[in-house]
Amino acid sequence: MFSDVHRHLVLCMKPLHGHKPRFRQIVVIKTDVFELRILEGEAVQLDQQAIANAAAAEIHAHEALAPAVAHAEKEYIASVRRGWRAFDPSAPSSLHLTRSQAA
Picture: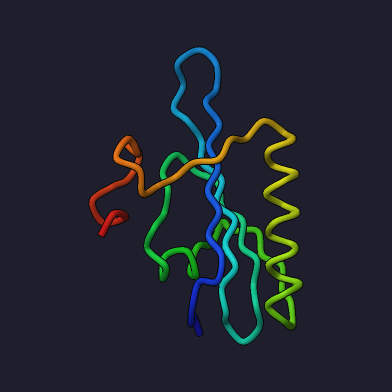
């Protein structure tokens, strides 16, 4: 059962040749355990329930919050080293949100 989001880190990669940008989300949520979920797609998902139910998410379980957050931060740093850039989905220039995602 989904409970709460403890971390939600969003990154963006703009590919060459005019393709749509890709987004990578690294999220720590509380279910029966603390889960680190990593999602990638063409839009930022802001709906917490959708994040919790995302079938394509890479999931890592942790017994406590601190190791889950540390793992999320490590994944974030590794993503930046691979070319991903920080992205703020709350900024007005965030054009890749659907109406249901922005609600």
